Length: 85
Image 1: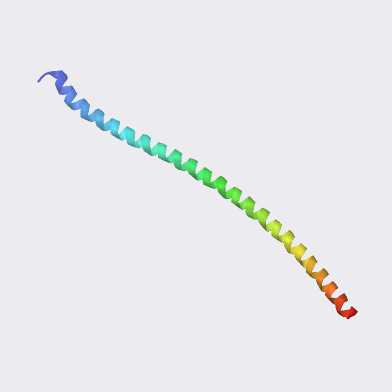
Image 2: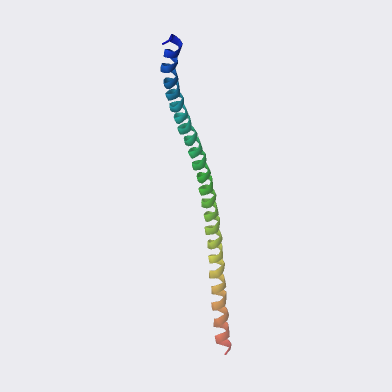
């Protein structure tokens, strides 16, 4: 058996194993990067949702104050109408 064939039979399987493990770790790194990007996108969506909920709560509070005012006016008008009868 020649020396070159001997080295090839030893080096090629080892190189194949190194390449496979290298690709596996590269894949793990890429998945972690994509996961981080996805988490960041979800974080931004949540921040927007919280801001929208805050605006909605403010709008509801404003509407509630307006409704209380309208209710008070209606009560006053009913009182005046009852006095007129």
